[in-house]
Length: 426
RNA sequence: GCGGUUGUAGCUCAGUUGGUUAGAGCGCCAGGUUGUGGCCCUGGAGGUCGUGGGUUCGAGCCCCAUCAUCCGCCCCA
Image (cartoon, rainbow, N blue to C red; front, side, top):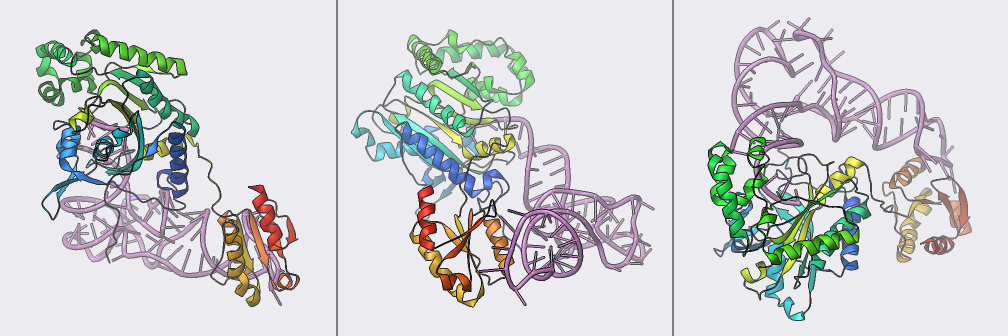
């Protein structure tokens, strides 16, 4: 009998998984932290479908990008429409923002999302065909202070998780006013040695010259060493914005580097672009990437609205934490484990459990009808702080033996006393 | 799309120049304690050696193919 397995590049998340990025308790903990910090900064959740019209991504991300040209899961619906499993989170969030007229609320709309992202790529460490992103989008402000706040929120998340040693890289990729001049300058600079560059960069030279700077090919890097810097071509508006953004970041106490080579893989970015990397992650070192996209809402058919956001790969965060052995605290799944002795007690077990649960105490028992020794083993393995032991003696006296597993100490108490004391501790 | 790695018990792996019934640790189950977990001791269950073909008297080991896995390039979270 052939066994089924999760498709290449996908993974399950399940209780007790050894790999942190597959462990339910750790996922739950991280998601809670994301939600708390998002709420703390005024962001509210938006949930969008996993499938979207294919055109949404070709329009937003750009026809020439790798994502659109070769990494999308695209299929035809029975009705004949072309649908795509979302390969990124910003375009769907903005589609929802426009479709539901969220902009009509006025002010700045702050949205966050947590959900799966699909890209057809060759899996490797930290890269999956289905991964999960936490992302935020702030729509309606062109104030550079919000650029700094967005970066700061990402950094706050990592700090909260105990992830240090991070490198934050910032850049300005300009705007439609100044980009053409820079693009032309870069093309003229590279023209004499196009033929000496890697095949990829020769392609980029024609299709998307800015991406040439992103090449990791050592030969390309050497050839492009003296390449013109965007900062010398940037228009006054973009320069002012970039300076204010950096000043605000500095004022918050954030450490960052200016990386004039930082060019992100989506066509929609304007002005601010940033990336947060971890040196502990291996080849796929980017934990978070984002930037400003002042023309995108309009491009997608909404009112002219500036925006900025980021996406953060949750699997990569978990992998980085695992490598540093920084395990987030997770509460034990159970508080009490009931151990019964004999037929009479066994038949009472479920009723006792129910009383605990109705009082809000997570409790369980061993349903296999096994020996006390086996039940105690199960209690220990469950990590519940307390074992409640019930036998004929306890049934007669109306109380239970409360064993504190960590110390081995035992006392007698009625179930109500145990409940009152346990709830008092929370 | 390209390059490399590894596939033996639930997990991590060992298996000498191809040679009888394929091993260890951990985990699991049970007993040692007919009312007590974690430590210790004893025992037990569990494997078509990824799959298919080939070479050979004989293949976990050699050859071919295939599937899967992980890692790197590319790209990105």
